[in-house]
Image 1 (tube, rainbow, N blue to C red):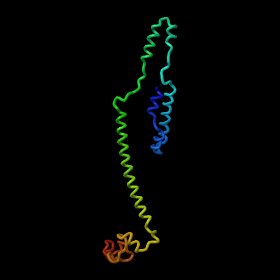
Image 2 (cartoon, helix red, strand yellow; image 1 turned 90 degrees about the vertical axis):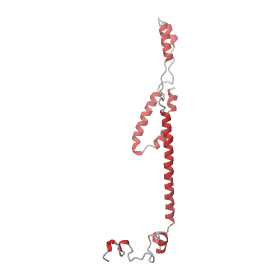
Image 3 (tube, rainbow, N blue to C red; image 1 turned 135 degrees about the vertical axis):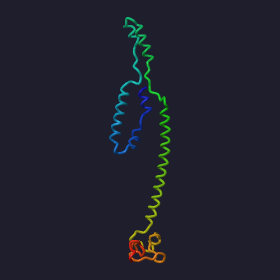
Image 4 (spheres, rainbow, N blue to C red; image 1 turned 180 degrees about the horizontal axis):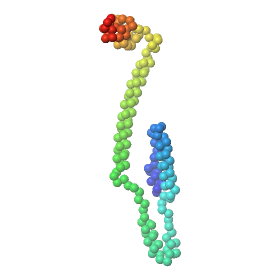
Length: 172
């Protein structure tokens, strides 16, 4: 009976280990070792109480009524298994479902960001290499950064701080 109770509440240790961060692996190993020790202690006992031959004792004792009393007490004895009075298992299951939904939403958002980043990378991969790009190509791909002598004339070296009217060049 004890073995069946433990089998129902068994932990999926492989899935548990996947979720343990690398820096906490030692704590995980210690926790699993302690759990294995408890499980082994439970499994060393039989699942049911041993049968006692009360007829043997009734024949040997001077007062067989004592053996009858012990037999009634032994048969009436039950080992209580803890019950979930506050319905904690349902609460934990509900929290697990809510956390699963939040995790799925989080993963979906991150996947959307990954897809956006992959789209940007694919666009960048389609661009010509910088050493193969001409000024016309640069102006086509990056119109806001390229030198445009018609719309925005500038002087060499075409950097903003070297242009007339810039606050650092007020004396030019």
